[in-house]
Image (tube, rainbow, N blue to C red):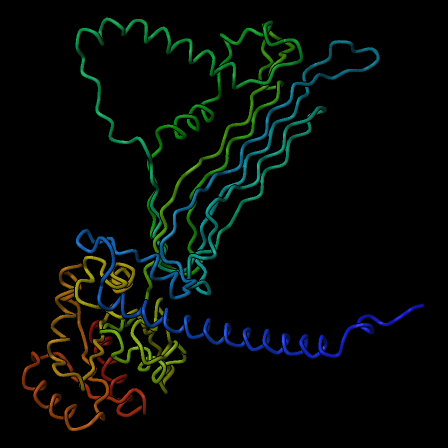
Length: 470
């Protein structure tokens, strides 16, 4: 007899199962609520930890910036180390013309194709180095073939990078002490020369492709390697490290050249050897380890303490929409906004993460913040005028900039006293600050949240920039 599943169970058992299901659903809701609360608490704890600078190795300046950025869920990358390599050149071919009545025809092996190059090209639509892979290699060239068919050249690899990227090559093993010319060294000099000659001969043999079963029969002592191949081999070992600053849209930089394609055996046809049974191999491309550093390029850089209202100010004057929240270090990466004026004049403003005392030693976001200030032509200090001593905050900001780079404090600056509508304390602080601030530094009261006096601030910034151009 066929019965439904659970038909023979007791009614009490069914009721117990229903209660158990309700209990499981209730526990799941509790777990999800607790996980959400823990996530919020972690964000607040990370922000307070960054603000206080209570991280390990504070004395040495290594405060774990990467950990802080990952904790905040940051996907913005402004420092990256990558490896690039040009494509390997294709090998030349060893081939001979054969026909019914031509048993020993002339050589007709094709040349190998050149390897592809690796280029860095500036794209203004990119804002982070996250578009760059850690390992990149261009396409290799094709090998030569018989009947004079040359190999195809490898395609170039073009990598898009943001504007303001600095590229520096890193080399290991440099700076080794030179050997002194003592007696032991002079005694072994003859053996070293002999080993060097043997090594050069082995390397020369490795540069050639041999016809099958002709490796021992080919005599390469009188074969000359073309000058461009020698120059390429020398550059692979002794070339100067590259260093380039990419600042303009469309600017290109060759970071890894491709290898040269090998030569077919017709290039070695000589009166003493009408049928050369060897061809030249393709050479390897350049391989480099690069350190990429992004320094944001903008006309104006916003400098201020955490929660001073920099992101709110940027939202009120430009088309950018950075995150705004009532806790420190809401902004973990730079945001760039464009301010459009009625006469079509434009300027760019960069909102940079908050600065705390000790930033020159990498406290807080430290160097991750300060490197983006270096490119700004004008510094705008955003200070909370409702704080107990806004003038002290302003001096602390200038002190940190001076410790990081003395040149920064010599640049033109504008001071924006934000939260000027916060109450009588803010008004009294502003009036007192006006009597203390040095001459020539504009002090503008604003309320970024309610967009009060914003036009005066942007007009003043424009006038300072135009005066710098004159």
